[in-house]
Length: 428
Ligand SMILES: *Cc1c(COP(=O)(O)O)cnc(C)c1O
Image (tube, rainbow, N blue to C red; front, top):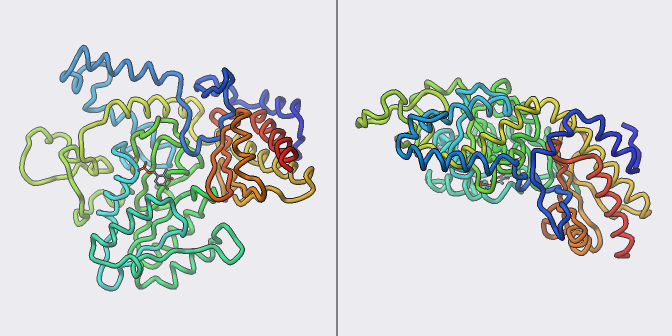
């Protein structure tokens, strides 16, 4: 698009935005009485205004129904997760049976690896991206040790080429194929948290399956951000958190996906608990675990009603937005506008003060732009915060800015560029 770098233009884009009213559904943090321009939804999404009400409703259910709440009231807790499953499915391109809200992200990654990392003496390796989120590195490392292997032998990390920041799909695919005989599991992030790169999930899945490996994804930064099609892409399993792009609150409930083709595989290991037991017979309390069919069979503990109520409320706002299509359309342009205003800052400064490391191609990124600040990065970042623009800082010199289509505006992006330019001039 041929963008313009002025307020009237940004406001015109906002008035043409079919999703502009969704912003009113969220609470923005304030500083000195003024709301922040919030560009940190990749880390913790904003609170929906209804959040307090839905929590209060559940507190009232608990107050008035107590244990009867499991079977009585408007949405009995016993079946509450089913309402979420219906709303989660369109966000990740799955059927409701293939998804389930439960636990938290890293816990779910462990539970799914128990089932889907099936190493043998010869085929025991896991291939992943280098620079993955630390929790994933620790989970994978400890799972490898748990199965009696040495992480140094068993983990292959695909690295960017010399002088590059992101991975090339051909390099990922080649590494998978070259190590095909030894790889048991291909486990990538959907979007890398640091660079914002959206990996070519279908190509990675195809390559993994071509060598007989299982393929899983951590969608922490992808779910609710980009339109993934987990079922159609034939991905074996995935997990995500709900508190980043899905706005379900700090420590919010996690989600899992298990492809339908695995539902009747009784050879899969599980770390089981009563809530994953065949639902109709759970309360017979019998010996010998029989899993419920589908993703629900991976549940361990009873329904976490409070965090689920928050996730439910935020998912209803995704439904209001028409799930991913309109959000993604806005997101493509909104993030492109952020690339543009940062380019304009560099042009006006007469040098590449801010190096963009996130891929520009819309197929390779979501709603995040990571920039390397070449000079005075931390001072400029702190000054942005002091002036009510909240992004996030990663040592040693990276600023991540996420214009989230659910609640950010083109005006937010314009103002960010303008302030970045002014502060960069002042710091010279
Ligand atoms: C945010 C994030 C996590 C956080 O995991 P929790 O278990 O929810 O604390 C893990 N992995 C990735 C890739 C993330 O981006």
